[in-house]
Amino acid sequence: MNFVFNPAPVVSVPVLGSELRFPVHRIYCVGRNYEEHAKEMGFSGREPPFFFMKPADAVIVVNAGETGSMPYPTLTKNLHHEIELVVAIGSGGKNIKAVDAHKHIFGYAVGLDMTRRDLQNEMKKQGRPWCIGKGFDHSAPIGPITSVAAAGDIGSAEIYLQVNGQDRQRSQISKLIWNIAETIEHLSAAWELKAGDLIYTGTPEGVAAVVAGDTMTGGVAGLQAITVKVG
Ligand code: MN
Image (tube, rainbow, N blue to C red):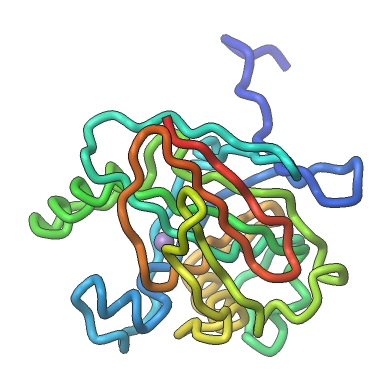
């Protein structure tokens, strides 16, 4: 087949302990999925799950032991970090029941749902889409994927983020309002999940701004931590 120009390369994430890479299809994100974060955003913490998306090529791959680099984005003066557990889907499906969700998970990674908070807040106020606040270029740093078998009991793992060595976010995956299986059930009722989908499962409380020169280090117990420098 001949294209009118060369297709963009496939976006992919390394798999820890393997030469194989995980090709990315879509990036789904869950909004306000920890009660204390929902409260700091001005909500009750009790609402049905809701979703937004980032383009697959918003990914910044951060290899194990390396420091990733995220350019400070345009148009914002309030770039926020959101540390998140990322679920990597290995086999797709529609209307997946929570009880069957584990069969569709390839592995897990640590990700950052970077957010232009000032733009997101303005869009919320005007009832407009969040794309400009959430789905911008380089907005989805991610570390290597750990297979389910190697990841251990992720449902009870600690999640944390430090900026320049100081704690900003620290919580437990067990505090997810909608857990991993329930999230997959809800998502797959709205979209057909495909192999290669990434699900950013939401962030705990403590979101705040970073500026050029800051270094973020985040992790989830049992997974490869990531370090990203801004600017
Ligand atoms: Mn988020």
